[in-house]
Image (cartoon, rainbow, N blue to C red):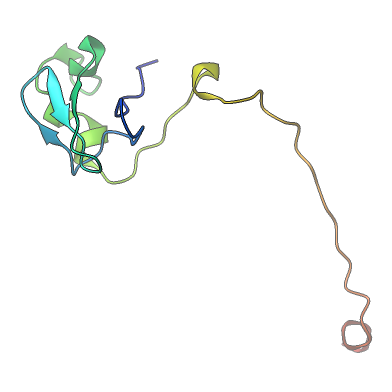
Length: 95
């Protein structure tokens, strides 16, 4: 997968509100730090070519779904927990 591009200072994700300074750098919209763009970010998965980073979905759309690897986890994933609640109040039983 592609590296998830985040600000080196504040860790915010690249988004439509950042400023692309050129094909190698971007300015964070939260803390205004200038960051380097990884080479693989120049790859456009839609056209399968390298080129303009402004065509990337991360920069074009406000919502993007990521598949994060373990590199982005502070701790291992925890097993799912389920909690079942039963309403046995007088009102619930009467209706």
